[in-house]
Amino acid sequence: MLECNKFAIQEHKKILSSVQSYDIRNGDTGEIIGSARENIGAITKGLRWIVSKHLMPTSVEVRETPDDSLVFTLRRGWYIFKSTVEVRDSQGELVGTFRSKFFTISGGFHVYDKEGKYFAHVKGSMFGFNYRFLNEDGSVELGRVAKKLGGAAGLAKELFFSADNYFMEVNPELSEQPLAKMLLLAATLAVDIIYKSESKGGIDLGGE
Image 1: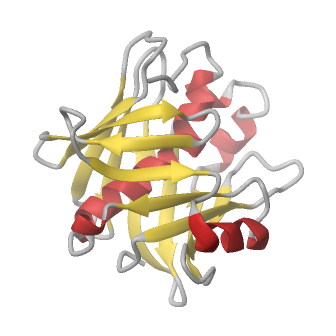
Image 2: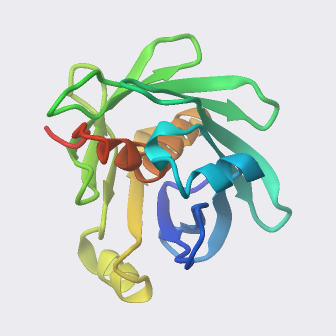
């Protein structure tokens, strides 16, 4: 999975389900290369029908096809005003963390590596799923996410996938850095599964 530089994220639409799941595809070929699915207990599932989802903990497992092997996991605890999301590899070792800003209109979230070193931040509109991951001073674009990508290949993908899907492209300079790509892919999933839910609680996480 982490050999790819372009990813297509395809959400499963399920009626009367409190759990989100996705196919992860090769952004160039459309081939399914993995999946992402919330892995929460029965009590949490039940509480989601009566307690706002954005207040509750969640865990998301990302697995690779065809053997369904675990690639990484996203975990967030109970959320009140500010959350921290952990990314852990298949062995449970910390890869990095995402930290949301506190009561901000133009917020987004920050990405840190396992040593706590600043890795990236979000810039753009997460509500429209058009945003970029930039380094600390904003001089380097590490990755970008959009509903569609430019050029003929982007048009082909737009025709192949429905409007609910989106695409993540990694800076080619990170091609040989699987941990960096893991953080960017995890951050992309976190926007949809975690931070968009939090924003419904009154915090806009999308601005410039």
